[in-house]
Image 1 (cartoon, helix red, strand yellow):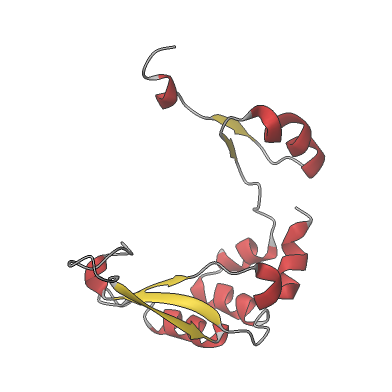
Image 2: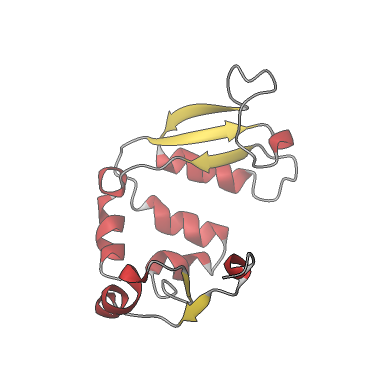
Length: 138
């Protein structure tokens, strides 16, 4: 094995069903690119129509549970990290309703000086249960 084996191209597959994924991919222990695996998901289809379509689609899954948002100044250029003194972070955390987050993202959609935002990971079932049901089968 050469030192550059890690740089070889990744294996690629077209969409696979869950049985094929479990039988042929899951336990191989190697990365694989699954082309178009989620292309038929309703959220992906909505996003193809643009940011407003995607936001409108996502709004219906707002279950009333606030979501965690990390927000930083434009200068961090999407690099959420420690502050310069390594005493805190270069962003703030907030809990906000999903609808508020979506409206703010749309408000800044074309603003090059917009603050940067990142939706924190949450257990999907608790913040948008309908969305979890829609995506589990694929």
